[in-house]
Length: 291
Figure (cartoon, rainbow, N blue to C red):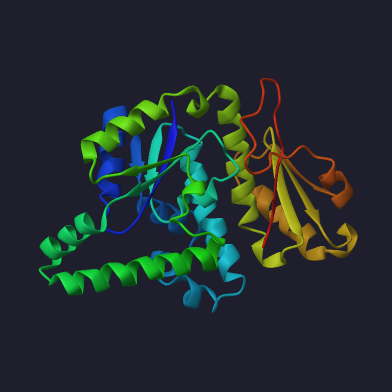
């Protein structure tokens, strides 16, 4: 059992690789469907989320807490699928949204410029020079979007566990490599990992209801319990207190929700970025700061 996130540049055959890996392993394969699920779960018009992906910086800047809301919706929607295990996701900057789960296999699929040009020329029936311009504009737009939203360059190889080329290798070669790596011990989803993913997904869902309260609010989950802390004095933050009751009524799977002090939050166990999978018996509490 494994979860694979594939980041793909434009015209690199990354979507084909993802679909064939999922088919070979018998996993579900997700891409744009996540946007639809986010739209349904959080009553956000799909066109708004789609536009946010395609033109994130300018669109999100016009929304209150636009960047945080977008990231929260996407992360919650993705994690609702991830917690089910056995899946391949391919899409824009997905590895950022699961960066705190080190056992998820994060892959970048690249291809040579010549191979990408052949795809564009054949598909769009344009000249080589026009194809070069199309690819350059797409790459620049995706890079700017990733930096604006997540502060990353998606072409940075250090963000991934594995980078594969579909040229000169074939798609078949890439599929075989990914399927083999997914079976390796570091990427096997243990029962403990699955429990942690469920907690992480629950915290992400609760967080979507609190984004507008600002960056001082933190959310964590442990064994189905939600703990919320605020930078302001709890008794003074009436908005947070009122919101807790609404969350308890709307979010399924909650065992309880509690407001805690920042001091208590600082004493909680946290799984930092880049840390190896937790040892047996250790169940981290996930804290994520809004903003």
